[in-house]
Image (cartoon, rainbow, N blue to C red; front, side):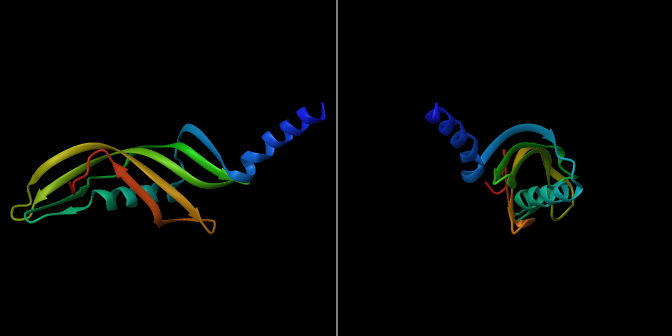
Length: 130
């Protein structure tokens, strides 16, 4: 009986000590985090070549939190999925050259209680640098 109680107590406390990952599918509503996601996606999609330049066209669409990482009941990391449109333009004429819809995943890491662009990483299905 004591060993069963001990195992239950350990199973309840270990996720709080070593971290807990929660998979979810909730809309991101905080305006400051949406702005940060938008900046990170823009940074990833920014492109300048010899004759064209391009990047995020508009703002990210439908940002949703898909994963939350917690340590000691405090959120340490958020993963957000969103959709974006990349558009490139001809330097000489300013005409659109290419448009691509892409799904992006942004990981926001909380450092010292704050989220920042420096601690945010984005990858998208479409990579204009490739």
